[in-house]
Amino acid sequence: MTQESSASGGTTPAASDQDDSRLLSNAGTVDRAATLAWLRRISGDLATATTTRLEQSLSWYSDMPPARRSAVGLVAQAGITSFIQWYDDPTSTPWIAADIFAAAPRELLRSVSLQQTLQLIRITVEVVEERVASKSEDLREAILLYSREVAFTAADVYARAAESRGLWDARLEALVVDSILTGEADEELPSRIAALGWHGHGEVCVLVGTAPAQFDVDQVRRTSRKLGVDVLVGVQGSRLVVVIGRAQPADADEPDPDCLPFVEIARQLEPAFGDGYLVLGPTVPALVDASQSARAALAGFAVARGWRHAPRPVEADDLLPERALAGDPVAKQTLVERIYRPLAAHSTDLVTTLWSYLDNGRSLEATARELFVHPNTVRYRLKRVSDVIGWDATGPREALILQTALILGSIGSTDVARRRAAVRRPRDGGAR
Image (cartoon, rainbow, N blue to C red; front, side, top):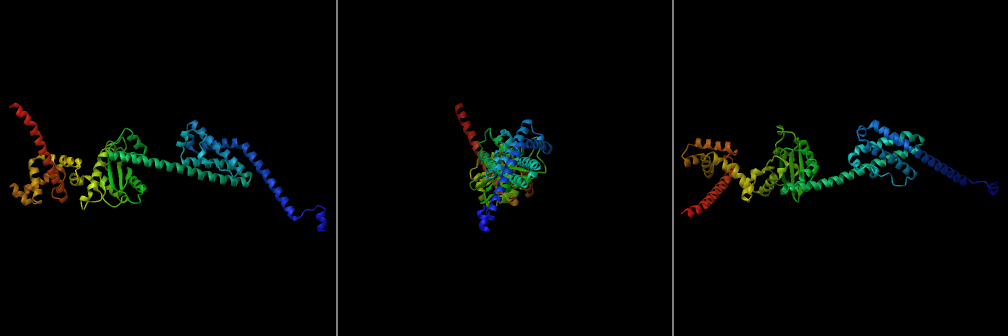
């Protein structure tokens, strides 16, 4: 029977299975081709429905100018068209999110955020799924797979753009910090600072320390935001420089009385620095004057090892003696103008008493004997010294600062007297 069946043209079970598979394959091909034709016919309706849904669901879309709304509509149409092409050939490259704005003006790339892009994708997918998912389960799965690929690709594109912008901002920030340190500010400096997101218009100071082996710049920025200040960060070799500015509005006439002093802000930022000395420059009124604070901070950082028990952070003005000994002209001028000249202008007795008190090892009795006055008089005059200049001569560190100022002031006064005498001699000789 088997031979007769074979001879008479009957089919074997294996051949029957092959025929069934071929028929199913042909049916699947026909169905897919019909689905593609149907998708192409309704693509315009899908784009129109998507635009209507965008207007109803997204307030930022409704607030856009007409030209930009039209550009976003073109983006949605491009997404739908790309899905149809991908469904036709799933092995081809999916719709690339980098081309999402290919038909849109360049400014749309800068005006639509990642969040808005994902909202656009989500609504487009919802509309397409509502209209075509009921056609077949295979089509619904294709929509979900395609939307996932697009969302991840869009996130990757924005991440790459953010990384590129971050690298550019880092280079720009390094350039701005270098300009502040060198004092070579130009007309473009304000615009560069604004491009970095500097919002402050208040006081500024510069903090200089050692850069750690693993520097976390994000930690510095997070801490600064909590403290309500703006920062510019620069790493120069082993040195870490942070420019700190109060985030004060431009229309504010006076600084916020509740704001933290810069010394406390420096203490909060201290963990971000490496081991070694940490020097805080003097406060200046605005960012354009930050180079003055930077010069003092750098000079103090260079000589901080001269103070064995220097605190961390230490103010640059507390290192004035070391800076003056190292030849810093700004420190010398500061000591003379803040200490010697105010005392000399107020009373010569204060200068004489301070000299004697420091020369006699800060002994009230020895000073009183030298000046032939009562110790209470010496004590009163020292209090007057503190009232005039703000430094207390009874402390060991401040005594060093005051003695350095007296030495520099006396040398400067002698030089001035000699120059004046040299100018007078030729006139006197000519008169004879």
